[in-house]
Structures are given as C-alpha cells and as structure tokens.
Length: 356
Image (cartoon, rainbow, N blue to C red):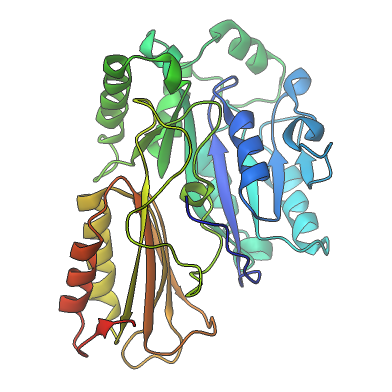
C-alpha cells in the first residue's frame, strides 16, 4: 500500500463524494478512510431523520474528527439553504484540512450536488476529485440494488420535502452514471462466479454512459487502499513507492491485489498529447488512481495531474520540485510501469531520461 505522505494543503481543497443506498457500506468505508488514510479530513454526512449518523460512529477517538451532519432534507434539494452555508463554514473554520468527504443520502441525486461546486463562494476553494458509488454486492447478486427495500422506502417517506420520489432502480442508475469508481461491498460473501457476475452487470450498466466505463473494485468491511479514493498528497521524491509495490491488506478472490508504481523522468512535455496519453493509459491498463506532476514546455509552473477512474483533472500549481522533473504514481491492477515510462519518453520532444 502507498504510504501516506504529509503535504501542505493544496490551493483548492479536494472533495470526495461517496454515494450509495442506505446499508450499502458507506459508513464502514468512511471509518476505514478516517482511521487509515493518514489525512486531516472533514466529513459531511447527509441522511434522513432517524437514520442520521452520529459522528462518534465514524471516529474511533469518540468523534474528535470534524463531522458535520445535515440530518433533515436531501442535500440535492437544499443546496442553497443548507449545503453551501455548511461548506462555507467548513472552509472558513480555521481547522487545517487535507480534504473533505461527503457521504450523501442513498436517495440523493449526485448531479445537483456536483453542480453546487460551481457556486462562486466555493468553486475556487474546492475541487471534486472523484465520485465513489458503493454498491451492496450481496444484494445485487440476489437481484436487488438494496438489501432492505422497505427500509429505503421508509427513508423516502421520512422527508415530505423530497422532490424526487423515484423508483429505486432509477436512483441506482443515476448513482452509477456519475461514478468515477464503483466499490462492490460485502464481496467476501460472494463466490468468485457471483462476484464476476455482479461486476459484469455493473460494467454493462456503466457502459451506457461512460467510455471507458468507470472501474469496479471489490471490497469487504470497508477495507480499500485510501490512496485509491483520496490521493490527496503530492508525490514525494523521497517516499515514492517502487515499481510493483503491493497492497498489504489481506486478499482473497474477492480482493484483487492492487499494485502501485512510480515513474520519474527529466524532460518536458506538451499538454494536449500528454493528457491524451494519460487517458489512453488509464483505459488500457485500468488505473484506479493516477497522480503527480509533469513539466510542460514553455510553462514556468508544472502541470498537476489527478485521476480517479475515468476522471482526469489537470491544473498548474507550484510544488517546490525541480522545473524539469516528472513524477507520476499509478495505482491499479496493472504492473506495466515500464510501458507507461516508455510511452512518456516517446511523447516528449526534449529527450527525457530516467531520474537517477
């Protein structure tokens, strides 16, 4: 597993949105991220009425980590009244943060929430680095996107202001549509054939909107490499992982091993060909996370690179590294770091060389 690397707070605070139905495993996932992520994270939880989550359930230290609840109303229906003021308070609160996790209600439609990050007061202070959809693999293998449909229907009825009383299947498809990564929870309770069938079903649905479709990753008890979901740190030359470094969590057939690799080169690149190369590499090798920085010809600031699944985001920002130094870290099921390095060398016009 890639070690957590402390880093200064970036110009725009990274936000990870976690969505999925009630009971899918979102809270268990958040607890793992908070206890193993090595980051200073605030959590914004949006659930309905009686199913609101006490912050103490998320934090092993009894709730000392910043947890903000929006217990009444769906965040996508109360963006201006509740969500935006809450985000502004978090950003102005004075507590140093490395990122924000947002756990949406299982009934929330993710797209209005994503649009909310265009609001002038927060658009230049935050960036959505990924949307993670958690799916109950055991329930889906049994033919339903939710474990307890009646409980979810009761959840719908608890909020009379809910404007999108939609069929569960329709909400489920909308959660998949915006996903950058789909986590299949309770995968340890499935046989290899059942897990394969669930992942094939998800990929078929995802292919309706995404080319390439967002990757799926099996998960049990909320355990997943935090770097896959967070990726908040910059690549530190002294702590970048070696090629083929493996994730040291326990694995079985439900937990395909993740590999992390780093590429270090000296040279300069052109932005458009570079971004095309990275998108093709993500599709071809199935990278779950890709992050780092690349020097561009004719630019003083390096191009910062962040990718979660199919979403690739780039921006210019100083980071204190040498002007001609490329550093990239990729995390996924592939170990073809030599090919990625060769592609980067071939795409540069300045004769890059391996970093000694």
